[in-house]
Length: 112
Image 1: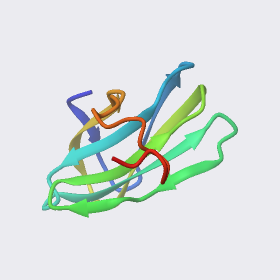
Image 2: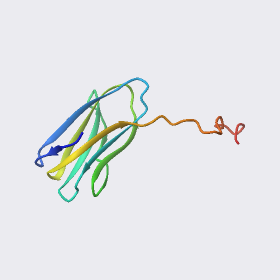
Image 3: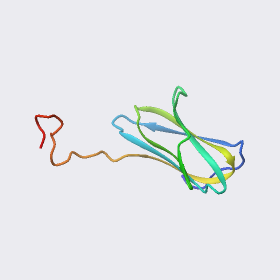
Image 4: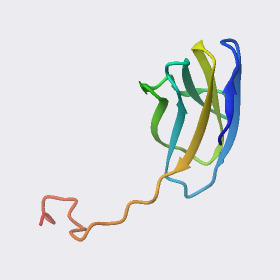
């Protein structure tokens, strides 16, 4: 989602998304100009239990890691630690990882 904003330090934005059965890892990214503000992000499940708050930061992002999420409804909160900024939010499912050519090799006995 593009063209989003935290227009003052008291502004908070919430977004809802669904995880369907068979989902794998999900990634969350909030992109913004750090010179303008310091934004953070939090992830909650449908009971509003926090899965993640804040994130690693560099000059343009407050980002979470990847999570393995059970099917259900989740919420993302974007908020300001300092200032106001425009931002872009990305929530995406990871591509399934294919077996490598050496599988099965997950035991001592099947080592290649």
